[in-house]
Length: 356
Image 1 (tube, rainbow, N blue to C red):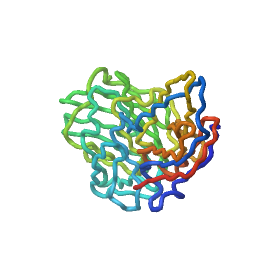
Image 2 (image 1 turned 180 degrees about the vertical axis):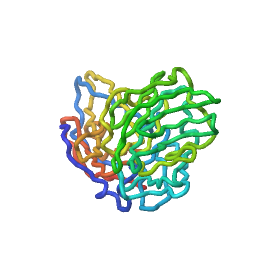
Image 3 (image 1 turned 30 degrees about the horizontal axis):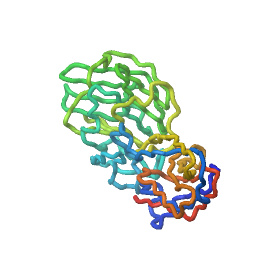
Image 4 (image 1 turned 30 degrees about the vertical axis):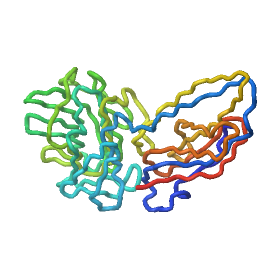
């Protein structure tokens, strides 16, 4: 009848219970049976077309920075799986985290990480870079940069109560923006840099900042350098503190107005819509296809994903197995299954398979 009939928690259905805070859900298997046989007459039913659960097409890079304290092993959760290379004392720290178990800990002396230049090959595209920094130095902070030499670089940094975004190519600025801001020691922020066509936006904790524009980006392409992209470093200057949930998006301006910062870790997948086609029958046997509806919550049931539907089978069919695959990464996820048609349906069993 469309009401939730079971909640499946990952810890109850995955035999290997280590590292349950950040799992890739490989598939869900549900066994169910439909109701009585079909009848002769005129009726109608829906064919449901379910697309593949796709990776976010605009996600270029995503680092949750989760792991054990002091670890120097980092992973990119996007489909690109870019290598993250630590430099100096860069490591995971459990002293603070926005989400998950840890964050990137940078000592302000010699520590930063690099990723390949392809992750920031924006060209003229819209893009978004957002992260959650925890500030331990209010004098100078270098959030991220890419620098080939003194005449070719781009950077987002902070100095003397001002945040700067600059892009410099061949000795000339292609973009130069700034705004006044006072960060506080021992405080976490959400910071987002967004390009939407000829516009640049910078958000702090979801609030769009009023920018002073020295050189508008206009139709200029972002610099294209072959050198790595640096997180926590620019030209001999370092970030002091922690950084969590670092995401790079290419081809999309995720925000152009004030927004509420994320309250849970980002997934690397998105909800693709399904389609319905109404079918009719006349004086022939027909069947109502009972639909199983799968959804999930990553915040304890406060909000839920879109429904993902699949047919349990025509009435009179039995022992149907439904499998949803590639359900993405999550922590503390709750699954919900419901049946849509007003027919007798029996849930025989359900299992969630996952891995690190």
